[in-house]
Length: 357
Image (cartoon, rainbow, N blue to C red; front, side, top):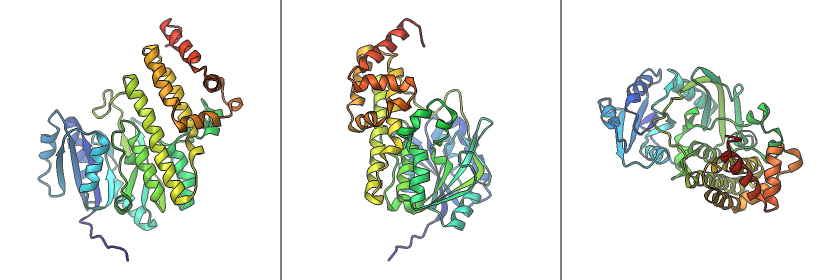
C-alpha cells in the first residue's frame, strides 16, 4: 500500500546562497513574476561573509519565503539541506545570480502532470546565446532513459574519442545543471538521492545521474525557460588552483560515475562503463596539461595516483588507439607502456621554454 503524502506546496524552489547579496533582489523579483504561485522559496545561506543573510531576511515577511542559516559547507550540501526542509510535491533548484522565465513553473508543472513524468527538462540561454540541447519535445520511459538520456550526462564514450576535436563529438553531451529540470520530490526523497558531499565540481551532473537511475519517465520540452548568466567573477564558483584540488576533482568524477554504474548494474542488470570510459581518458589528458604548470614531481605524482585507479586503468586499455587522433593516441600509447613520464616531461619542458602556453 502506497503512503499518501500531503504536500503543503506544489513546488519548493531551493536557492543555495553564498556571498550573493547583490543578486538576491533580482532573484526574488524573478520568482514573484511567476504565473504559477503555489510555491515555497527556501533560501539556504551557506555561511556567507557578506550581507546575504540580511538581504534575504527583508524578503521573508512573505509566508512562503524562508531562510535557513548554516555554516559554509558548499553548494552541494546547501541544496541537500534544502531538500530535507522542502514541503513541495516538486522541487526546483535555482541559482540566485541567474534569471528565469515568468512561466517556468507553470509550463513545467503542466507538462509534468500531463505526462505523469518524474522530471521535466527544458532549454536555457546564456548571455544572449541560445542552447537547445533537447532538440524538440521528447518522452523517455524505462530503458529509453538508460539508452538516450544517461549517455548525454554521464560523459563521453570510449568509441567517441575518434571524433575528438570535431563538432559532432561535443554534441553528444549536454550541459548538466539541475536548474534545467523540475524534479518530482517523491523520487528524490524515497530513493535518498542527494548531491554528493565534498564534490567541488560537477555535483549537478552526479545528482541528475542518480535521479535518472530511479526515474520512470522524463520529458524534455522545446522551450527556453532559464537564463544562465556568466559573470566575470562568479560569486559561487571556486577555481581548482593546485595539484591536490585538480586530482581530487578527477577522482570524484571516477568515484561518482562508479556509484551510478553500480546502481544501474543492480537495477537494470546493465553495465554503463562504455558510456563514460572516454571521459576518464580525457580527464587524464586534462591533468597532463594543467599539472604541467606546477612542479614536475608534484604533477607526475598526481598523474600516477589517477592512473592507478582501477576504472582508469580499464578505460586506458579499452581505447582503440588507431581510431584516435595523435593528441590522444600518443600519450595513451606511452602510458600503456609505462613511459607516460616522457610525454608529461616533454610537455612540462616545452611550457618552461615558452614554446607552448
